[in-house]
Amino acid sequence: MADLELGKNPIDVVRPPRQRLMFIADQGANGVFVVDPEAWIQVEFIATGRGTHGLLLSHDEKKLYASNRDEGSISVIDVASRKVIAKWKTGGNPDMGQLSPDGTQLWISSRFPIAGRSSTDVRVIDTRTGEVIATIPTDRESHGLTYFPNSRGTRSLGHNGVYQLD
Image 1 (tube, rainbow, N blue to C red):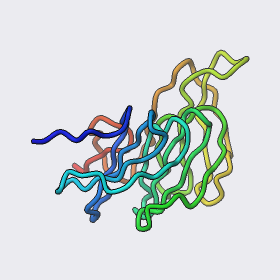
Image 2: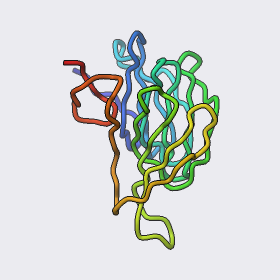
Image 3: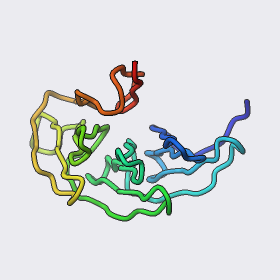
């Protein structure tokens, strides 16, 4: 196995089914690296926003949602073109998320307290408009979440959105 020097602080990785490429969120590089895992080379870099942290694949597998923790936004990436097609200002510092079973809502934790508040929250975002439709207060440092029932499977493999059918 060979090493691949990549970015500054890679955090999350997604390899969409039926795709030959994988996407790696890098919090230090402020974007997403696209890697060919067969050739083990970087193919592209997609600038998304400050502190790119988490990745979540849409249910139709056509979009990736990238959380930009340090600027309070979500970048929507078209998987086919590998281009940012929308950026939603959500506030907070979006961390890791999960989609509702029908894919119309993105639930995402906001991990660190913001000035003047001692708690953090979960934000619910409409995936059709990018609008924050609910903010749910939580205790300090809510790091990720899950949503059940989950349309991707019934057994967690250890990270947000990574499930396997039994």
